[in-house]
Length: 239
Image (cartoon, rainbow, N blue to C red; front, side):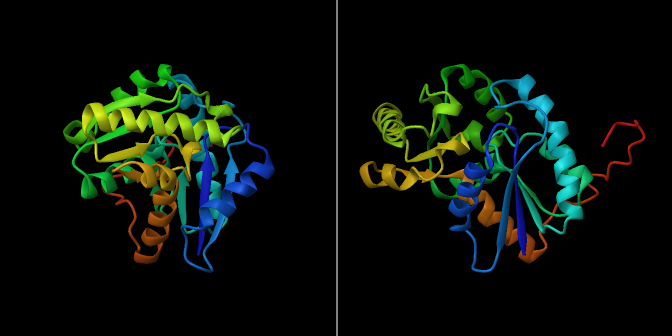
C-alpha cells in the first residue's frame, strides 16, 4: 500500500519533504509506503483565500497523477483541506482532509476544544471556515494564534513549543477546554509535550490523517460517485 501526501505550497525543499516522510511514517503500519511532495506551481505558502484558490487547481492535477502512479490514498496536507471536493471529483481513491478528520476525532473524545493557528491574521479565515462544520459550531470555543509565521514555525522548535504551551494553557484557564486541535500541520509532533503538562487531549491532524488514509485504503472507504460525480471536463479546463 502507498499513501500520497501532497503539500499545497511549493516552497519546501526535498530534504524537508524527506523528513516529513520519516515523521509521518510513524503513524503507519509496517510496510506501508508514504510519499510527500509539493505542488509544482502555485503559492510558496498559504496565507489567505487567494493562495488557497491558486493551490487548489494544482492539487487536483497532482492528485490525478498520484492515482495514475498507483497510490492507494491521498492526503491533502493542510488543515484547510484545500480543494478537497474538487480532488474527489477527479479520482476514485480515498482523499483525506486533515481538518475534517481531526474535527471528527475531537468530536468523539472531548467536550470543548480550541483550534490553534499560526498568525493572528489567519483567525478570521479559519473561524469562518470552521463555522460551516457542525462539530465546530457545537464544541469549538475559540480559534487562537501563536503569532509565528508559517515559514518560521519549525526554525526554532523550542520557541514554538513555548508559544504553543502558553496559548493552550490560556485556553484551559479561560475556556475550560479539554481538547486542542493543531490548526496548522507545521505544528506536527508537539502534541505529546502539551499533553504532558496540561489536562487536554491534543489532536494532531498530520498523524491522524495519514493513519486514517491507511484505514480507508484497507477497508475500501472512499467517496461515493453519487455524492462526488466524476468530473467530465465539459467546461474544457486545463488538467
